[in-house]
Length: 511
Picture 1 (spheres, rainbow, N blue to C red):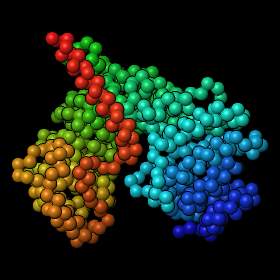
Picture 2 (picture 1 turned 90 degrees about the vertical axis):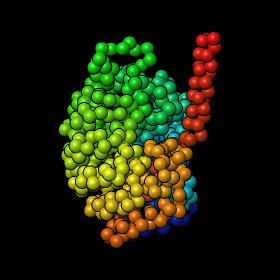
Picture 3 (picture 1 turned 45 degrees about the vertical axis):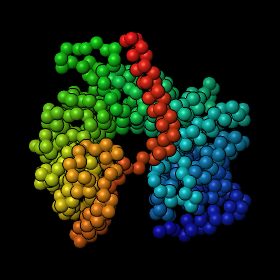
Picture 4 (picture 1 turned 90 degrees about the horizontal axis):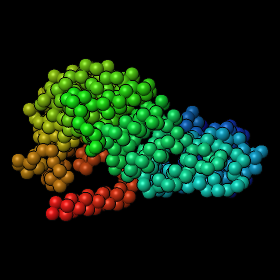
């Protein structure tokens, strides 16, 4: 639904020449309405002119594109390249124009979501990495323009830094003199950086204002780096923290400690405990056997999201999770890579029981769940009446077991999304689990389609056509990885080349 006011704004935006001539006569409180209409119709020239003349003290992109009484549509999943480029050009125009016409104090460019299929007319997206580069380039160009130095606008952004845009972002974040656009980060993602680069750019990004920090994939951190990062910078407003694989490994030069002592982990846990806003923690693919209580016990705020995938948890770890304060507050939980139902059935059952009132998203990929475990799994899931998403790829379940599980899932009233594994019936007899990517892709496609259709039929006959199901064999869509795949590929090849060179050098020394 849209109001008559929004329909009028659409009519004006659909005629760019008329709109450009009329902007000075448009009431200031109608600028947000006209901006959303222009974004919807992809009128880049009108968007740029609106930002140049923006008469209000704040411009908040996410709020402007979200649902409103005048237009219920949500445009935040339209990362339209043409529209976002126009926003940045208009913002640059704004700080370059005469002082008397400048009122804008804050430009919040956060709130745009990256999705697999763009809904904007052009279908051309500008991802988070591209938005970061464009914003950083605009900041640097304005820093060099003498006409822009008289007016300053604070810009809030979600930043994605890799080696490919590192120098540009550093220049944008740390100008030598007062800058027209003062860039500040609310969300920060880092990939393919070395630890010194990460520390440098985070210092400039303003850790005191940072809400989300994602350090992923090709940032090679060990426990010493993590401790140094948290101790030196401090993140008082941090809500969400993601660390890369092996982030809790002992530094190579670190002397062994007496059994049961890990001063680095103790220090990291203490630093995390000082973050009173922290409610989301992801430490997947870090070996944390026997250390979950030491890491999570000191936290002052209950966690709402916890990713412990492939962390080699033991009985003590699972017992702590099932009994700790965090369990009753969890909304998102990932325990992939652990034989939960086989090794820890009672702790797993208790954990889901305590999380049942809040749990919305549960991921149990490659957990060795077999047909013989199905009754226990169904019993554990049954109290989770708030569950909206369930992912359990990579588990060796038969078609008949999946059918029985889908019948049980129909009883979860809020469930809307299920990712299920290729049934083991579709693989050659005796196929090993967990599977590598090559083995995973070699299944009987025709047989899978018949089984998948039958499973959808189970949902339809139960009146649950609101549940979407899929089998993303190679994982879910990740816009950040897709956008930087070429750069990350080069990084991995270079890392492989370096490893070979080191190996060759070691062989020569042995000779």
